[in-house]
Length: 165
Image 1 (spheres, rainbow, N blue to C red):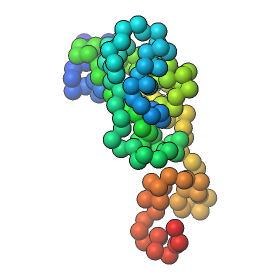
Image 2 (cartoon, rainbow, N blue to C red):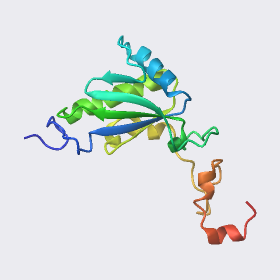
Image 3 (cartoon, rainbow, N blue to C red):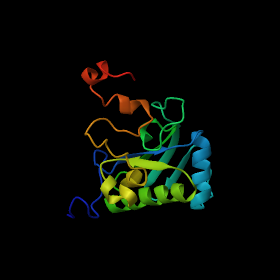
């Protein structure tokens, strides 16, 4: 039997069984269609496609706020590609397929970040290195350059009382 990261087949409960790829673009079917073109796939199954051992389905992100999300606030990007590995697929093939999807999206001009248990095995750590968080303020306080509302939530309620936000 191979090690955890080798060619052993994955089971449905494996860390390699599913991935969510957040894309900063509206209209999930359009994103999937463009991804299909970028990968040179000819079959058309609507909002779903297959890349190696990975089934990729585009959906609107339920956590999107409806406003333009900040570049590093990927959890609010409007589209999410839900990726599910075929049972028994080797982990390294799943990692390779996710990398192919991410790189195709990036080449196509999309901002995309993968959220999974194996981000460190993907290019740019799943994309997070492409959209780094801003540096904290020199005084150790809140982030000075953040524009998204979630940055304000990092400030404790006690610190907010004395500030006009």
